[in-house]
Amino acid sequence: MSLQLNLSSTRLAARYTQMLLAGDRTAARNMLDVAIADGMTAASLLSDLIWPTMESIRAMFKDDQISQMQMNLATRLNRQMTDQLAAKLPLGKPNGRQVLIFCGNDEPEELGGQIAADLFESAGWTVKFGGGGVANDEILKMVGDTRPELLVMFATLASGVPSVRKLIDYVREVNCNPGMQIMCCGGIYKRAEGLADEIGADLYAPDAAEAVSVAETQSDRRASLDQQSVGRNRRIKKAAIRREERSGTISEAA
Image (tube, rainbow, N blue to C red; front, top):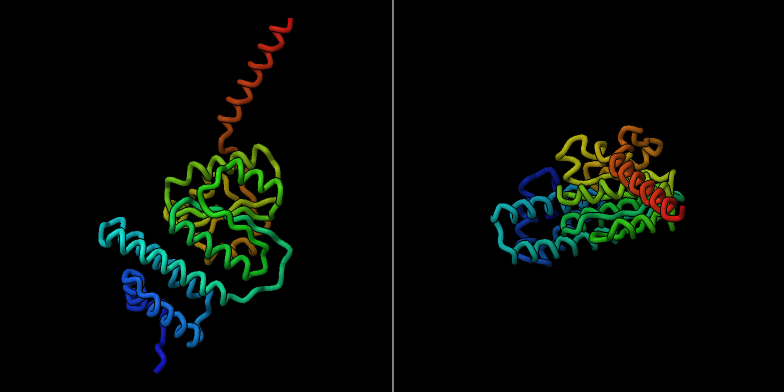
């Protein structure tokens, strides 16, 4: 008899979690195959099972409830299941819009960024997923070279926020792609209400599952002028230094 899956069930999530912690690839693969056969979509499994389970496992590791070995087994197997589900996503008609996606340099963030990339591509977007650990100047260059409609920064940890704040500041200051929106997505922005607005993002999505919907329904939303003033003091200080340097050069020449 076919297994009837209810993704809101903690029992189902617990079973899948135990499969991941044990590194049981066959059982995990079979569970997802049954779910697809019973009518669940790959998108719903990615957003309602794969991602919440990764968050739960990360929390368990942080609280010393599981070992490093279990964390490694679960993380890598969950990523493999993500890849298999992504291959089952339908590909929508291209909509002529491009999105760049980057994330923090941590496994849950990489997974969240990957899921976001897969869901955007399924919705018809042209996607470039740069992952984590990319320097802001490299991201800025790519924005200028490719001129996407949307830049998504996915983060689950507070440690990544200062870098995102600086990047948004650089993008506003250089103005290399004025029509582009910037979205902050992920757990840290969900846990800290208003953080995305505070650091100057145009859009906010709590997770990858909501990112596409937010991008497509709020394509005209832009950060207010007050929000875009993030880093203004730093820019004023740099401008003052440049003025002093120019003044010194003029004095020497005289």
